[in-house]
Each structure stands twice: as structure tokens, then as C-alpha cells.
Image (cartoon, rainbow, N blue to C red):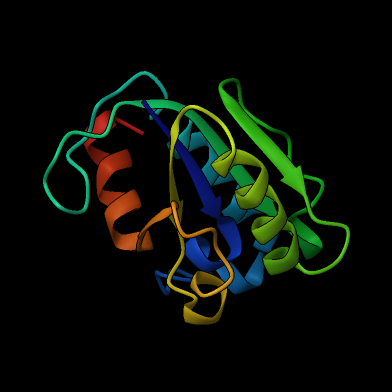
Amino acid sequence: MTVLLVDVANTVGARPDGWWRDRAGATARLLDRLAALPGTTPPGPDGAPVPVVALVAVVEGRARDVTAPAGVRVVRAAGSGDDALAAVAAELADGDDDLLVVTADRGLRDRLPGTARVAGPGWLLAAADRAGG
């Protein structure tokens, strides 16, 4: 069983669709798409099935006040989103479930627990599309 931990700012910024004009709106739309993932088993970055049991999304800045859709736990970073994500990853890595962190940020990847797996935003967006999100 896998918990997805999502670097939302990094994922929103992965597609140049005008997100910079309305960061909160782009974040809300992304979270709505991702809400379809818990309970599904998409192919993982390596092709092996990923049974998603939970989705945790870290939001920051202007997007901090977005409404969390059902099925998505939103962590609202008081300061740095990277700091909040690294802290949540450390907490989740101690659990019984596998942890798959979604980010393209190389510096952040270096701060993750050694047991965490990593995927890029492109994988997540494709998985959400397949799930109907």
C-alpha cells in the first residue's frame, strides 16, 4: 500500500497552462484531479502497480487557503513548502505504508528519507488522467 506525498507547487508548475495568474485556482483544480487517485492502483514510475491508500498534498503561499477535496489530506506550509514536505515525508516514512513522493525538485529529493521513492509530476498527472481526475 502506498501513500502519495505531493509537492503541489512543483506539480502545478510542471505545465505552462497559465497557473501563475491564479495560483490558488490552479492548486484547487489540481487537488480536485488528484482526489480520484486514493483507492486506485495505477502503474508506478517503474511500471509496477501502485495501490494508493492515501494522498497528502503540501500547499504553500497563495495556495495555502484552498479547500481540501474529500480524500485528500492537505498540509498547509506556514513557511517553506520544501521544509514542510520534508518534515511530512519523515513522519510518513515511519509508517507501515510505502511512501512515494512526487516532485521534480532535486534539492528536495536529497532531503527525503532513504526509504521514500520519488516520481515526477508527469507521472502523477498521467496517473490522475487514467483515474478520471
